[in-house]
Image (cartoon, rainbow over all chains, first blue to last red; front, side):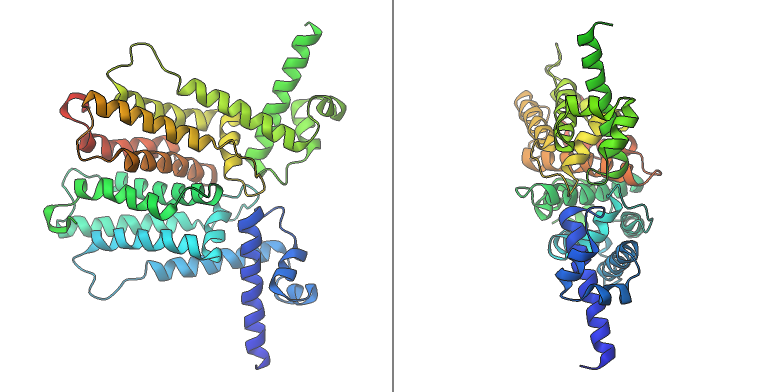
Length: 196
Length: 196
């Protein structure tokens, strides 16, 4: 492997190991030692890539933001199915939060009292949900009496809550909670055009 | 003040101070020193009442559980308004979570990766929501096609999510998010009898 490839790979391993530590114990109790051991690199290598635990936290958040951007990226031919796209994407986000420790740790940092940065991944999600709903309204697939702001808040709160509960209670499935929310709501807010 | 009253008061002050520290920084970074200083007592007095930080965490959770039980306690003459009672009580819970640091810290501990106990306040809330919905169904005020389990999960996830977002984003109002959820949902799940 070329020297540069190795450096990129070491950096990715450190981000993954930091995400696992933050996800497991929270930001404050995670030590640089356990992060370097988890990545299989020396603490010298860790310090070469990241000057501090805060720098590692910022790297986890920024990688999670990139993954989120990828999840909400526009897909070809999605119109006029913006409401369907919203439902599908919230399922994808719930699934990816369950599977991808970096994404989960990035969102988790926003809820970690010891972490005070402000990437606010949930705000990115909330704004995207709002834009999909605005599009759905223009397409005439959203019932006329639904307030976009109410629905954007509810969708955001449900995904955050489902994830928060899932991370502390093994019996709670975030994917199932997001399913249940849409089962309940979709037939009641969509015009006949997009009902399942 | 009698000696016993003073002891009770000191204990309450320590629980409040611990809740403030956990709420501010999370469980792991909170020190016994800052908790005793915040309560205005000596570290000797802290150790007299609580043998460890874990014992303080357990006291915060147990006090929060008592407050939650009080919020969901049956009120006289509430029948047949179980759905209305559910909506009102979820507003009360959102408001009390915003105002009461002990309640907030108790729920927060359930989402704190460094805290591994299992009082599971959210499960108490989820089960109570389920019991109110079962009652609403029996009273005929819940639309026939609403699955109780779907709605109980959604209500739980929304309150958890609204609280989690509120604790990390000053622009997000948990009370408003719970309002918005019910504005959206209530007219769509209630029979004419209880519509606002």
